[in-house]
Length: 135
Image (cartoon, rainbow, N blue to C red; front, side, top):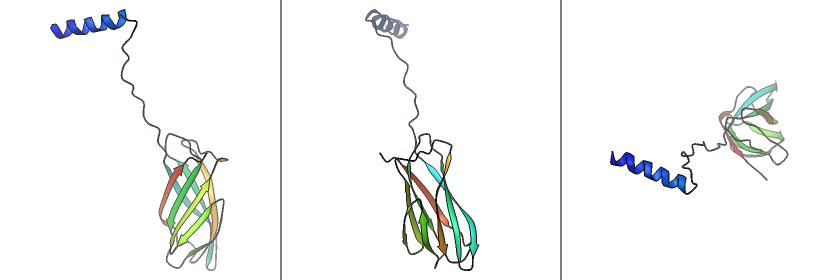
């Protein structure tokens, strides 16, 4: 009974001061996350064309991304459009996007494409996507 009386007295004091107790805030923090999905749109003897779709799987829009993937040993990226590519051995990093882009939560963008040299249909493995915001 004392605890209840003390709580009522505290509530009355807050109301008397013009203060109203507020419930605890329960907002979820915004998250940045994405996936990258490569597709292979053409193939020829010892070469292929690829495209990479970036999908926003988070709760906040982003405008830049870094996609990494591994190519089969001996394959190389010859050219990339809509991104800056770096390759070390069979590991490839492509940076793209910037202030003119926006990928809303739940949406996708054809982020970049390119030409690879090597066995057509060899496929990319260990594909990752890291979103970012560039001002």
